[in-house]
Every structure is written in structure tokens, then in C-alpha cells.
Length: 81
Image (tube, rainbow, N blue to C red; front, side, top):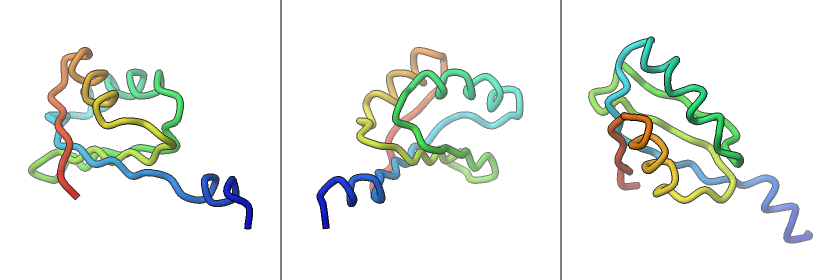
């Protein structure tokens, strides 16, 4: 199979601890995350103690997500695998 075939199927899942706990904050973060190309989908588990943000992406560095959210006023740190 061709190498591009695999790159189209597989993507990275990045997982972060955040402080996004309210519906208002969730709506505030939506346009922030939409500025990054390469995000296929994202979700925040506001019920989890770590307010876990999961991002399915193509070739995004965790530091880019952290910087983007920090600059927008949110706490964000990568969770280990």
C-alpha cells in the first residue's frame, strides 16, 4: 500500500488536562480551537476531574494547543499516555 494511504487513515490523539468546566467556557474555547488547521475533532469531558480535552489531529504538536489555550486564558497541560 502507498504511504499516503496510512497518513490519511491514522491521526494523532492528543489528551490534555484543562480548567474548562462550564458551558460558557466551552463556547469560549470553540472559536479558539477552530483557528488551528489540522484538528479533525475535539471534545472536553467536563465531568472528569481533569476536564479532559481530547483532540484528534493531523500533525499538531501538543505545545501548539497548550500555547493557544493559555493565550486565550485557559489552563492546559498535556496528560501522559
